[in-house]
Image (cartoon, rainbow, N blue to C red):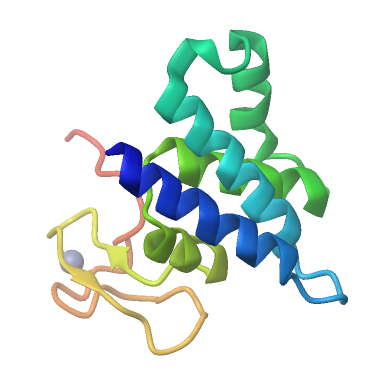
Amino acid sequence: MTEREFQTNMKAADTFRRLAPEQYDGSSDFWMGYMRGLRRLYHGDAFGIEDEHILWMASADQPDDTHRFRGMGYRAGFAGQSIQRAMQTFSGPHTYTCTRCDHEWRPRNDQPPKHCPSCKSPYWDKPRTKT
Ligand SMILES: [Zn+2]
């Protein structure tokens, strides 16, 4: 990620954070986490200590919304996701990948698909086990 990309993503995330709707939808926490993850990625160890980093990464697995959204955002930022990609991360998984045939597709709704549309496997989301 270049300095310019970093600045662009940070600026956009900050705008989204400030524009978060009054009714809580997690976006304020998500973008706050995203900015933090980005900074960590860009500045590396110079930004924040390792323990903190581990806590933020684990935060996405917490049951409460605040931690969950912050952790999701942090992971997205730390993964170097662009602002467009992070928006998709926030609004839900938009593409699925079949573990059997590597087919990628976009679902029509938010329901988890029952079968892979390509190979029809109902186990498309289960890791392949060795036989
Ligand atoms: Zn498949």
